[in-house]
Length: 168
Image (cartoon, rainbow, N blue to C red; front, side, top):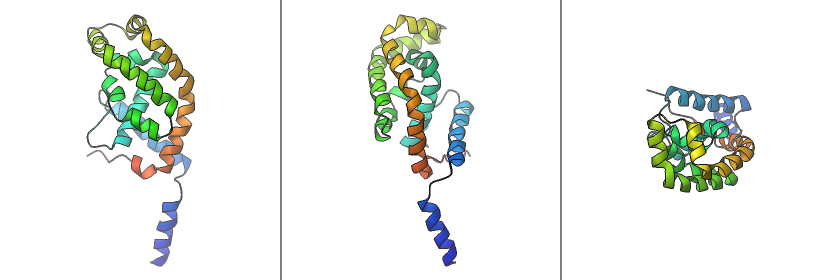
């Protein structure tokens, strides 16, 4: 039995193998597909919700910009959630600062963008009508490639905190 305890102690002090971390991140992406209209969920921690919100936002913002994130209905999940604070904690300050600026624009234009999107207006047309987002879209596009390695390292070092509860 003392061998078992030693194994447990050494398992706790070692990091999970990279493929285990990638499987966890894949599971997060699968959750986003499984629940296409929901990102932030009450049963999850701030960190788990922040990772879901980041992955949701990144998928849209990198290609289509922040107006498209809002048009898709995820403005609140990205700009009024724990995401920005968590990114600061995760040492992903450049993206956090970009999102803070985008959040100010969301507060100013979000309702209008959401209404126009709900009425069938395209994300492309909305992006053209809200040019204030363009410099932030470009800044994000230039920094986002540096984010993933930092997120991966953070998740790997805090792996147990990111394991999602099993769906009932």
